[in-house]
Length: 389
Figure 1: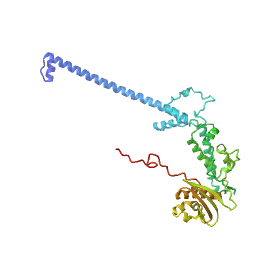
Figure 2 (figure 1 turned 30 degrees about the vertical axis):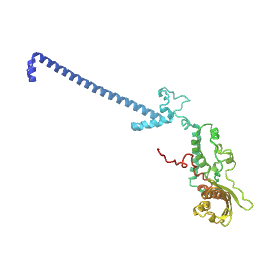
Figure 3 (figure 1 turned 90 degrees about the vertical axis):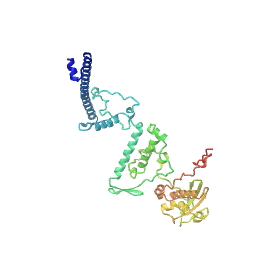
Figure 4 (figure 1 turned 120 degrees about the horizontal axis):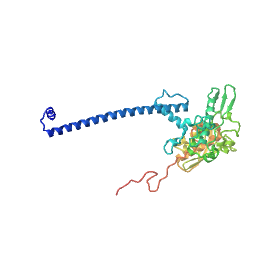
């Protein structure tokens, strides 16, 4: 046998060498067989694991479909796995607060559905809170803001039904023939809405200033809505009463100043370091500044244009006589102060110019001014050139 193996191998082997060669061949064959058996075992385990994973995926899909059907009363058999998981995440976001899913706090343990008695009177079948703002962090504020939004939507729907014609100062109903005067906006200097601390006491909740700024925008839109006065039943029933100041509740219209014995309206305007006292009365268009004609006091046409800008806005260049006394600052600041005082005087003399003057932002003082130089610097922001040595 050994000589036969030697002849097959093409070599002549002695007895001991042939035995070693046969032992090595048997070892190699045994190792190859062991490797083949291990590969077959691993392949069989892989197929078994895939089958187990498929079964787990099917079971997970069934649970997700059951949960989606319970939450929405809809069938999810035609939805993909990704769409189903996104829909479930949205539905669960309505039930659990966001911070519970962030990992900072453990997720609350809930009983299995089969262990919950649906006959319990205190159980909400939809598993959702009654208030939409329950998990917003500011539930009272959110509910109040939702009520104001609903009131604004109601007013807009009533205005857009096609029966109302809105003009600058009145509202006309084409169906009934009734006409109403539009409520005039509050004077810009009047504080209409209460401070944040008072509103927090009224709502009985602490919320930040940024949230109150959003609420004030909605309150202003409702207060200036053309049809809001139709819903008011009186000051006591006004839904905006908890947010309005006493001055705003006493009178919603701005009361202009009364002219003096000569029929003039006086106002004070400010810009930078300049202060201007302005007297306006109906006339032929004369404009004097510190006893001089406007063209002589302001040779620059740009300064004259700034000072007379309120007259351009209301279209009354030749309808009013204006007398100004201004001091402080330079020509630019004095022209801006005259413009500010003139706009305030025209607002008191002719209240119908209110919308145009407010829209052009002429009745509000311009707060811009030159930033002062800083000590140890070349200017307000400019630094001295740096020298290494």
